[in-house]
Amino acid sequence: MKDKKVHEQRMKGYFLQATKEILKAEGLKSLSVRNIAEKAGYSYTTMYSYFQDINDLIFLCVHDFYEECNVYVKERTPKREKTITHLKSCVRAYMDFFIQYPGIFDLFFLEKMEDFGNKKAIVDIISSSLNQICEEAWNDCLARNLIKADQIEILKGQVKAIVFGSLLLYLNRRTPSSYTEFINQFNPQLDRIFETGTTISTETNTTVNNSLISIKL
Amino acid sequence: MKDKKVHEQRMKGYFLQATKEILKAEGLKSLSVRNIAEKAGYSYTTMYSYFQDINDLIFLCVHDFYEECNVYVKERTPKREKTITHLKSCVRAYMDFFIQYPGIFDLFFLEKMEDFGNKKAIVDIISSSLNQICEEAWNDCLARNLIKADQIEILKGQVKAIVFGSLLLYLNRRTPSSYTEFINQFNPQLDRIFETGTTISTETNTTVNNSLISIKL
DNA sequence: TTGTTTATTTAACAATGTTAATTATCTTTA
DNA sequence: TAAAGATAATTAACATTGTTAAATAAACAA
Image (cartoon, rainbow over all chains, first blue to last red; front, side, top):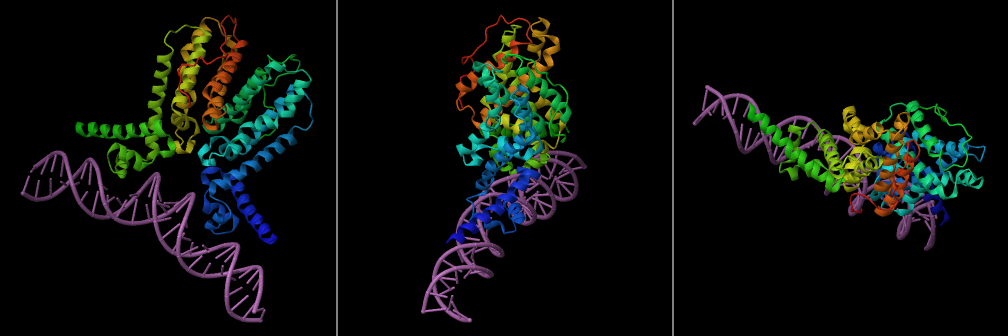
């Protein structure tokens, strides 16, 4: 009785792992049932014994990728400096994750909601991921009075919009065309958001490539 | 000899028109060769006599839609007030166009570049469309010294990122869930960009729904 | 009218997601 | 241990996509 459950979980794991690997390496475009099954080591229709359809499978990945992104950011911003600089580092690390895995950006933001089977829970995870992952950093700044309380919502909104706008243009439209250019455009934009609304601006703003990763697309 | 060209243009027109109609009404998802051909009144393979493939056809639409968007903005912002308020109205009208035609947003920003056959010309039209369409408004503000010359590039960058970020989240992730909410979030964000970097801020900022269209998704 | 070029359609193929029928494998129990 | 029954996995098949090649229809020139 228990063996059955164990077996089922193991099988699901194989398919899930295969799907994640393909998504990270090649993106949604080159994902197919036959594709996944081959990597998992089974015939394609076997998938349908463990998942309702391919979307069911795809969107189980969202949870895993969200957690991976969270870890990614935490690992690269360890100090908990409680400064706006630290907050900005978290935001950049969040972006870097998607630059490293454009396929996950696709899945998170470019895929249509209908393809998730309109599952609102999944969309909520995605939509709130940036704020969720940077929550401590925001709270720290607020607690230390580096950000005016009545401005925080609009600040969050601006950061969010600018992050996804920049990612969309860069990853999907190659605008700008190089990673260095991208960072050199994005950083001052991010800096500028915090120029007003922050109580004091003693921290230096960055206009050169100080990204956390050096990978270029 | 000339009849042939005329005929060819007419045929292309039929297919192009059909494609545009489907894109505007239903979006990329429900677009197919057979779909287009049926609307055009021909068998599906006839398309291949006039276009290399379906992407060739799709991306001829980009030119037309860009022009449509330009007209849309111009019609809704007629006065040429030469103020930052006017510039912001242009930006909002540009956004409204895509809110009215989410299928065109899909085509412009969500579609993969490979699907355009990597045609850089098309991507350039898309990427520069916002700045292109709002160019006069920006120049007017600059000429009247409402914007600091050394800030204009970063301002344009911020506006661009915030516009596409907001559209992406709203159209593709239903965040926020209502049009009114969307506008009430977006407007103060846009306002805030112009609070610094603009020489004087005598103009009133808008935080209520003053959008140019009243259609809600 | 006949022959040739052009236009259009029909037939077919490969790749996709999905379902139904079939076979293989494991489990239980006599 | 071996047969019966349940479960797991595969093969076959279908519908939908984009696309190409072959066949037919239409237009036109002599």
